[in-house]
Amino acid sequence: MEKFDVTVIGAGPGGYVAAIRCAQLGMKTALIERYPSLGGTCLNVGCIPSKALLDSSEHFYNAVHHFEEHGIDIKAPKVNIKQMIERKRGVVKMTVDGINFLMKKNKITVYTGHGTFATKNTIDITKDDGKKETIETGKTIIATGSKPSSLPGIEIDKKRVITSTEALELTEVPGHMVIIGGGVIGLELGSVYARLGSKITVVEFMDRIIPGMDGALSKELQRVLKKNLGFEFLFKHKVTGVKTTGKEVTVSAMNSKDEKVEIKGDYCLVAVGRRPYTDNLGLDKIGVKMDNRGRIETDDHLRTSVEGIYAIGDVIKGAMLAHKAEEEGVFVAEQMAGQKPHIDYNLIPGVIYTWPEVAAVGYTEEQLKEQGKKYKVGSFPFKASGRARASMDTDGFVKVLADEATDEILGVHMIGPRTADMIAEAVVAMEYKASAEDISRMSHAHPTFTESMKEACLDATGKRALHI
Ligand code: FAD
Ligand code: NAI
Image 1 (cartoon, rainbow, N blue to C red):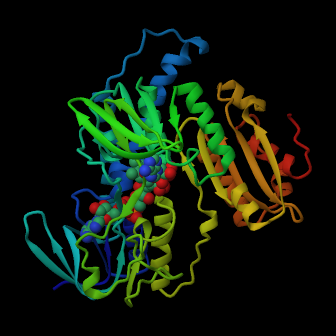
Image 2: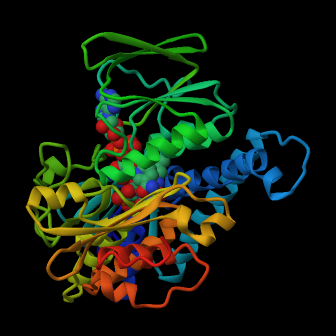
Image 3: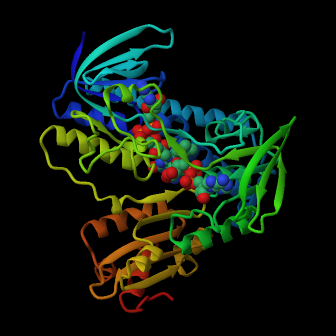
C-alpha cells in the first residue's frame, strides 16, 4: 500500500492549491479527485466557464448596443451559441490542463476515483469501473466542495429546470428564463442570457438582490440590470414549485400578500445557494463531526473533530469562494509544516461579474450600524470620472466607510467598470490598516478607474473630493 504524508481529497481550488503548498513544503502528497479533470467546481462548472460566457456575451451586447455610437458600423451581429459554448469549453480545457501540469511539476500523485475513509489513516479510492485501491496517509485535508441546492417542490430535470451547471451548456438562447434566487449565480448567468436576447425574471425571497452585500450596491445593481438588460424582479416571493409541460416551465410562488403568483418561461434556473458535498466520504465511520447545515465542523486552525484531519473550502463554514478555499489550503499546509499562518476573513473580497462589476471588502454599512460603530461615508460616482466617460461606463460608484475617529478604512463597496480588479487596492489598504487619508494622498494614474477610489477616500476624509 502506497503511503503519503498528506492526502488531499478533492481537486478544486482549495484542494489542488493545498496539495501544491504541501509539496512545496516537502511533504509526500496525494490528491484524489472523482472526476477525470482537475480544478473542481471553479474551473469546470463555475468561475472560469461563467466568466468565459460573461465575456463573450458582453462582446455581443456591445456590438449590438454600443459599436454604432463608437463609430463602428458592422452588419447586425448574430449569436452563434454553439461556438460561444465551444470557446468556453476550450478555455476550461486549457485551464484544467494547466492544473495537470502543476501536479506533475510538484510531484503530486493524482488518483482518479471517489475517496472514502476506511479508517482515519487509510482511504479507499473507487474508480468508475468499481475497481478499488487503498492508500495510507499521515494527515488528510478534506476539500470536497459543494453542489447546487434546490427547494422542496422542485425537481431539477437538467433540461428545462436547470442549475448553473446546465446553464453553462445550453444549446439555444432561452426566450424567457425564470431565475429563482437573486444572488451571485442568478445575476451573473442572467446577465449572460439577457445580453444574448433572453427575457429574464428573477424571483427572490428577500426584499432585494445580493442580500448579503451593502444595500447601496443592491440598489444600484438592480437599477442598472433593469435599465440596461430589462431584468424583471419579483421580490418577497417564496417559490413553492415548478412544473414543466413540454417546453414550458411554470414557476409558482407566494407573494408578500400571500397571493399565489405564476410565472411562465421556457427555462427555469434554480440558483438558491449551494450545499456542502460529503456524500460517501465515510465521515460517520471515523467520527468527523458536522454542523446542522451539513458542513464539516472545524476550529480556528481548520482542524476537524478527528486528529490529523483538516477541512477547507466550500465544505466548511464561510463564504463559498474560490480564493477563500485557496487561502485555507495554504493555511492548513503551512500549519502542518509548523508555520504560523493567518487568514483575516473580513478581508476576503467578494466580486460579482455582472456589468457593471460589483466588488466589496470589509464591513457593510448595515453591519457597522448593527455594531454601533461611528463611521464616515465617502463616495464618488463613475459619471464624474473622465476614464469612465471615455469608455461609456458611467453607472455605479465607489463607497468608502471609514472610522469616524481614526479615519481607518472599515469597508469598501464598489459597483462600476473593472471594480473586480480595483478592489485589490482596498484589500491592500485594509490589510495595512490604511486611513482614507492615506489613500487619498497617493498618486493614482490618470485617467484610470482607480482615481474613483482616491476620490471616494478624499470624500470620506473630509468631504474634499476634487472632481465633483
Ligand atoms: P470544489 O471546487 O467544489 O471542488 C471539490 C472537488 O472535490 C470536486 O472536483 C469534486 O469532484 C471533488 N470531490 C468531492 N468529493 C470527493 C470524493 N469523495 N473523492 C474525490 N473527489 C471528491 N467563486 C469565486 O471566487 N469566483 C467566481 O467567479 C465564482 N464563480 C462561480 C460560478 C459558478 C457558476 C459556481 C457554481 C461557483 C462559482 N464560484 C466562484 C464558487 C467556487 O466555484 C467555489 O467556491 C470553489 O470551487 C470552492 O472550491 P473547493 O475546492 O472548496 O471545492
Ligand atoms: P446565493 O446565496 O448567492 O444566492 C441565493 C439567493 O437565492 C439569495 O438571494 C436567496 O435569498 C435566494 N433564495 C433562497 N431561497 C429562495 C426561495 N425559496 N425563493 C426565492 N429566492 C430564494 O447563491 P447562488 O447564487 O446559488 O450562488 C452559490 C454560491 O456560489 C454563492 O455562495 C457564491 O459565493 C458562489 N458564487 C460566487 C461567484 C462569484 O464569486 N462571482 C459567482 C457564482 C457563484
